[in-house]
Image (cartoon, rainbow, N blue to C red; front, side):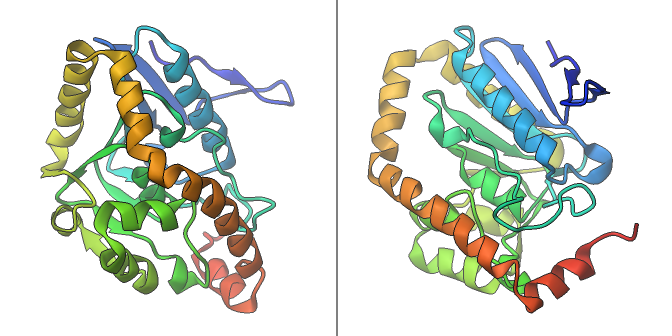
Length: 258
C-alpha cells in the first residue's frame, strides 16, 4: 500500500515525495516528483530514510526495488527547494541501502544526475535504461560527490574508470554505464522496473533471508570502514567548496528563476 500523507512540523499536510508499495515480498520505493524529474529535496531525504527503514523492519519484505517515477530516476538537487550544497544545509538521508541487511536493486529508469547518480551507487545491484543519462557533474560545479561515492564507485567500476567519471564530470548513457560495469543490465526504459522487480521477487521467494543478510554483510565488509570514514569527509569537502566564489557562481547559474 502506498505511503499516506505525513504531517509537517507546522502541522500542515504535505504530499510525500517518496512512494512505498509492497507486493510478493518486494518493497518498491519510488522517488515521486515526476514533474520535477525527481530532483532531490530535504523532504525527499526524510521520506527516503523513512521508506528504507520501513522496508528493513517489515518481515514480509525480502528485497527492495529503488526507482523513480516518470522519465527520470533523479535529476540532481532541486535548487528551488534545497538551499545549497553547503554541508550544514545538505539534505542527505540518514539511512542508505548499504545500511540495510536486505538487498536493494536500483531500477535506474531514466536520468541519474548528481545525487541521483550517487544514490544509485548505494544499491547492491543496478539495472539501467539505455536512454538514461548518468553524470557525476560535481567537479564542473567546483564541488565533490557524496554518499560514499569515493569509496563505492572505485569498488564497482575500478579505480581508473572511477577517476574518469569523478574527475571529468562527463556524462555517459546507459550502454556505457553497462560497459563500465556501473550497471549489471542495460534495457529499454520501459523494461527496467519490471526486470528489476523480477530479480527482487526471485530473491524474496527463493533465498534464505538470514543467509542473504550475512552474504551482504560479508560483501561490504572490506568497504564498510571506508564508507564510515569517507562519507563525512565528502560532506566536509562539499561544504567547504560550496562556499567558494566559483561554486557559488556555478550554482547560481543552475538555480531556476524565482
